[in-house]
Image (tube, rainbow, N blue to C red; front, side):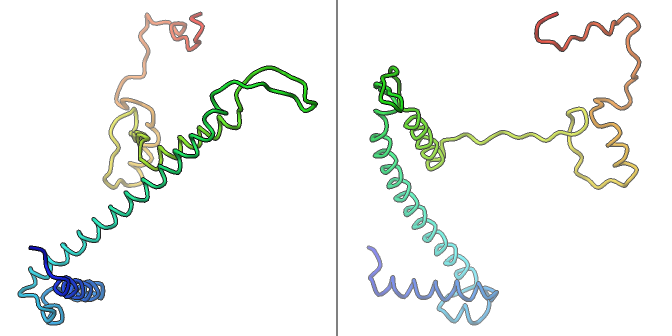
Amino acid sequence: MPASKAHQADTAGRRADLIRLRRQGVPFDDERILGLGYASAGAARKDLVRALDANRKEETAEAAVYRQQESERLDALLEAVWPQATEKRSVFDKEGQWVGEGVDVRAVDTVLRLIDRRAKLLGLDAPAAVELSGPGGGAVRLERVNLAELNQLIATAGDPDPDEDDEQDPGASYEEEDDDDDGV
């Protein structure tokens, strides 16, 4: 059976006091917190987690309602501009002379911006993958280095293997490398 309104109000007041004391840095085992009616520091800690979780659920529900409302607004705007962006119509120049048929380019731009806004609102865009690599595409060193090691890293940047012999195969020709896309 759900708690009575009086009990819910008492719990909300106690949790508000608990949060206020914790924000002031009061430890869970302090008498001021235990004096709120908690049997132990562990019980106070658990109640704080419950309070934060309940608040998070309320915030999540409010955010979902907001997203739904914004999505409906975007639907209405998209519906209003869609015909101008997709159906060919007669196009006239400034003097009123018929030029041909086409879609309203400004309406197309508006549709694209609405679709982009919807994707951002609903989190539909995939995050961009970013990769950081060290010299030669290898791993990035995360430990500290001294100045000499840093200079050596800078000097070998782009060299896949600093210990590898730089001599070219005597039978190899420089003409083998062709960066042109035309295949010549």
